[in-house]
Image (cartoon, rainbow, N blue to C red; front, side, top):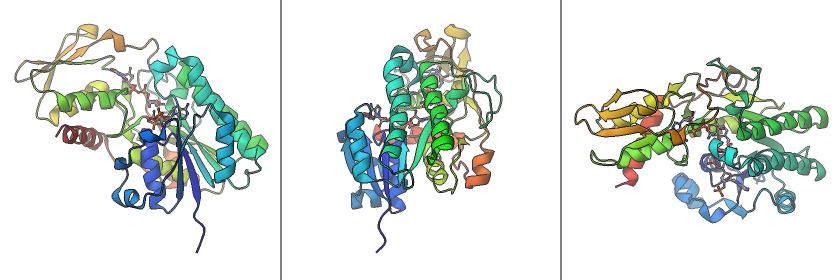
Length: 342
Ligand code: NDP
Ligand code: GDR
C-alpha cells in the first residue's frame, strides 16, 4: 500500500480551510488542520464522505507560539503546507497592526525558517495565501503578477512583507514556496465581517418590516470569486515541478451595490435607490420599505475603489479556471442563509 501524503493546513477553521480540507481528503491526503481553537471546526462544512471517514487530524496551536508550531511540523513532516491562517479583516488590521503583522508576516517567515532548520526543504512544499490587497489602489487597472505593488493598510503591508520574504527564501535558499495572489473569494462559509456575507445574512433574515441593512461604500468594486474554486488553484500550484507565484481571480468585478441588488432580487424584491453618498437609501421598489441605508461608520480611510485580476498565468500553467460566476455566487450564499433560517 502506498503511504498517504500528509498535508498541513493552517487556518483550518476559516472559510478556505474548510474547502481545502475537503478537497485534500477527496484526493486521499492525510489532512492535519491547525487553528487557535480547533473545537470551532465545523465538520458539517465537509462533504459527506469526508465527514464519514473522519480523517482530519486537528491540532490546537496559535501561530504566534513558534516552538509549538515548529514541533508540529517536525512531527507531521507534511509534504505540503497550506498557510491560510491570518488576521484577514482589513479594518481590524488598522486597529491592531501589531497582531496583524505577527500572524500575517512574521509567522510565515518563521514557518519558512522552520522548514529549512528541520531539513525538510527537499520534502515540504509551502503555499502562502497572499492577497490582491498588496497592489493597493490600481485605479481599475487589470492586475497580474507583474503589476506594481503599493500596499496601503496594515493588512496589505503584512501580506506584502511575507510575499517579498518568500521570494528570497525561494530564490536564495531553494525553498519550494508558492504565493497565491488571491482576489476576493466568498462562499456560504464567509465570516459576516465581510460585506458579501453581511448582505446575504441580512437579506435572508429580513421581512419587509425589519431594520434596514447598514453598509459603507456601495460603489466599491471587487473581483469576487467562489472559495471552492480558489482552493483548487492552491492545490494545483503545489503540484508543479517549479515553484512560482500566481494570481487567482475571475477577471471581472462588481460593485457592493450590484451584490445588494442581486441578493434582494433572489428573494423577489427590487431595490430603488434614492439620494447620494452617506444619504443614499435603498427602498423596496414595490412597498417603499427602507431596505438599505449608508452608514459612514463602515467607510474606510483608504478604501480601494476597484480590483480586477488577470489570472491568465494560472489558467495557462495550472489549467485553473473559476467555475462559479457572480450571479451563481450571490445566489448560493443567499439560498444557504435562507435555508439556515429554516
Ligand atoms: P478566515 O479569516 O476565514 O480564516 C482565518 C483563519 O486563520 C481562521 O482559521 C483563524 O482561526 C486562523 N487564525 C487567525 N489567527 C490565528 C493565530 N494567531 N493562530 C492560528 N490560527 C489563526 O480567512 P479565509 O479563509 O477567508 O482566507 C484564508 C487566507 O487567504 C487568509 O490568509 C487570507 O488573508 C487570505 N486571503 C483571503 C481572501 C478571501 O477573499 N477570502 C483573499 C485574499 C487572501 P480562528 O477560527 O481561531 O479565528
Ligand atoms: P476586503 O473585503 O476588504 O476586500 O478584504 P470586505 O468584504 O471587508 O470589503 C469589500 C468592500 O466592501 C466595502 N464595504 C463593506 N465592507 C464591509 N466589511 N462591511 C460593510 O458594511 C461594507 N460596506 C461596504 C469595503 O469598503 C470594501 O471596499 C477581503 C478579505 O478577505 C481580505 O483578507 C483579502 O485579502 C481581500 O478580500 C482580497
